[in-house]
Image (cartoon, rainbow, N blue to C red):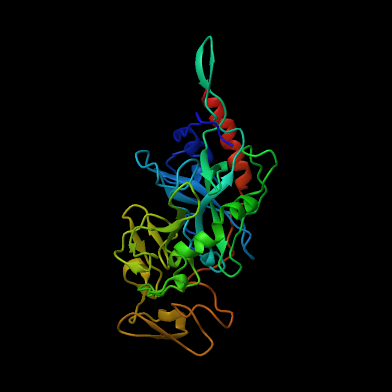
Amino acid sequence: MLTSNWKLVCSVALLAVSCMDLTPVIAKSDSSTPGECEDSEDCEDGYQCVSLQTTRAGTETVSQCLPYNATDTNAVCSGTNWGLCPSFSSWKTPYDQINSVCTYFPATECVTGTETSNSGSSQTGVQCIGVNDGSGSTYTALYGCVDFDTSDSELLFGGSYTSASRSASETADQLADVLGSAQAIEEGCYPTNSSSGNSSSSGTSSTNLCSGHGTCYPTSTSGDEYACLCNVGYNGTYCSGVSSDECALPGQCLTGECDLESKTCKCEEGTTGNQCSECDPDSSKACNGNGKCSSSGKCTCDKGYTGTFCDGGKGASKKSGSTGDSQSASISTMSIFMGSMVVAVSALF
């Protein structure tokens, strides 16, 4: 249980958890994994490397360069701040099936107030947030990004974490169970649970949270309500509407990647339109050669093929022009959180 003088301080933990370093170099990724990184030194100026944890079959924990703005504390999901997580719309299968969720990870050695000495007051531990379970218990935690399996209704944490908020150690899965996170995530971010259904102008399958175009995040520290935070260029309760061709996340366009200089989508051949959400009827590579593209930019797939651009079924490769295996970052989210504790504590003294 947290004491009454427990404090919420964000700046140190935000920088520490994200391992931020705004060194102006080009992101180390290829056409099939735009924005992929191992640390922030791989990212362009103004971007930081953010990790998303997953145990989805055929994937590894992945990290992606996301925009960082020092004046916008909710730019990314990290530390004591909720915000955006990596987006994988243009990555090859199965990465494009990842559901990005900003949620709670148990944290240790958290700030519980100040201690007064001859040299004055000093903070002890890492800045964390307090999460209430609705029954009077409060848990210390940090925000982080994780995948969600809609078929099994579970968060795909890949590690074990201990919590200093209780006498017994608890894993991230156990904390999610206590908070009822899975049910809250589905109720707030899964289009098929809505009476209005999922009418997506981008042609996105309803198997993705936030239509695959945003991050599902907790709207309060009670942990019992979640909503969609849409990527720029998308709108709607479930981010199912395409509002412009503007982009900020390297992997958010349906094909190709986001041009980080012009902040617009650079589509692969065969696709066009805002967010590369339409097939190009004038291209020989429209619908990946597995269907017909209408004048309105919609694919009618040949028998045996599926997907917005007929890139699924019969062993078809994901996304036109994508080749090679994804060289996913193997950064451990556990090490990121542990690293944040070391950096944050050292910065306080």
